Length: 247
Ligand code: SF4
Image 1 (cartoon, helix red, strand yellow):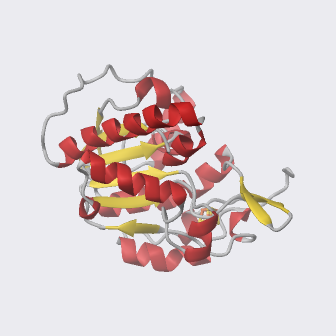
Image 2 (image 1 turned 30 degrees about the horizontal axis):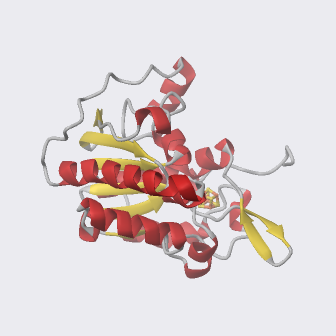
Image 3 (image 1 turned 120 degrees about the vertical axis):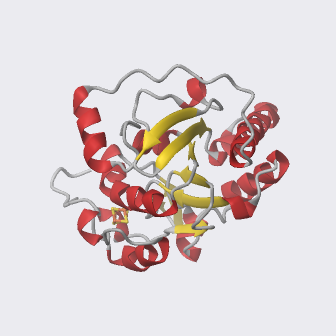
């Protein structure tokens, strides 16, 4: 990617102190990075804006980009099924992504998913920060590495730390973070491993369902992750409503 791409970040387009509806209305104007241009539209969020649980994914996919709604493609359908099996009610959940525009590489008539770069995650983070401040969920679930990078930093690893609640004090109160795999990764594993990957996702979401219901999770509270480098901690203090969660 060219070095001279203009990527000022979303902050100037994010209305301060706005609720989810106002944020959603403002988001189509965002030019915080270059991803808006080839995409069909911004894909902001869905679900209950007062939910106790926020699920944070990576970015919209092809179908989400076309429909303007997150988690409506194959990964979203798998997530919905896993939530039902885990006992996590749809009305208890707000769903969003770390990056609000679809990043892809054209290949003929197809658009192939391209993982957002760290710069895109950083550019789009003001939207995620603002919506988490507005929703004030008790539980934030990071679905996959991009959401983890955005909210918890690079010290937290999906496969090592998944399924174990991490409690942090935030500007909206005590918030529990939980890491699990992105449902699209379940779709990508080889056939002979897919059932186990799906069962692991359901097990993690069952912990979330317990947390949402106010039940103590069976998992033992973990030691906090390794402290972020000083520069990352400073960035976290500046950018996150979730103080101390890292960036
Ligand atoms: S991806 Fe995020 S920062 Fe970039 S243009 Fe879209 S909404 Fe703005």
